[in-house]
Image (cartoon, rainbow, N blue to C red; front, side, top):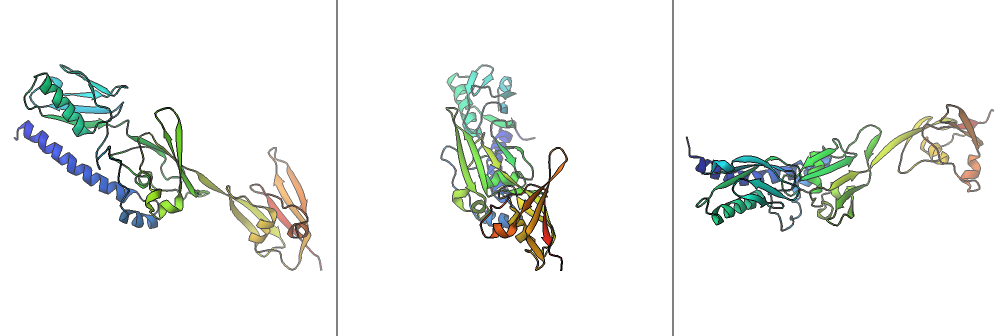
Length: 311
């Protein structure tokens, strides 16, 4: 069996290599739709901030760590990072590690062990058992909304890929913009708005580098229906989106327009009210076409009935 000291060093070397592979996999996983995914994988993400090297995890309050000190079993334990960003270790007391990478935290503990003459040439290994602080919240029109961990620097595409990409559920689709909400140290909030089309095209300025605690909101656009019957070319349902709405004239146009027998001065909108009763709104579509009467906005499940001349 290999000595523990050799194993821990090998694990630390492996961890660095694995982190680099993880970063590459995350870029490939940041797909928003199948077509966009191939373009995104070919586009290298913007360089991360200098504070964090690629693939490194930054420790924060609430994280659970496993500390292994070769030659000093009293310090081998699982610890949770406190609200102040410190861990408590026997013989060392409170050790501040918030914001450090794992390798930096290992170096900090090793330095204390040397300063207090507890070990010569100490060898400390720290691993993540539970990552709480490095999370991003994703809401709205994505396949799997939820809370996701950041394994090192992560871009907007990375995290949307983890959430399964933008949703295309029946009756709902993603809007034209994606919003990132970030809480600042002073308690204020910053909002970043990204055009979904730019992100799908893998434009570097749209692929923001996210920070722990960011909230990604993909506002959904819902699809509704109205119905057009009577003297129109294609009677039946007409779909519209919640962001755009639809009017009576637009609905008749979407149904192929009026037929030759249409009586445009006799058009009705049938609407079901909240109490279950039905009301009828009379329109003169000919006057609306000429701009003499205002067009009428429709509500979900309205029925537009276009009258017909009797010959």
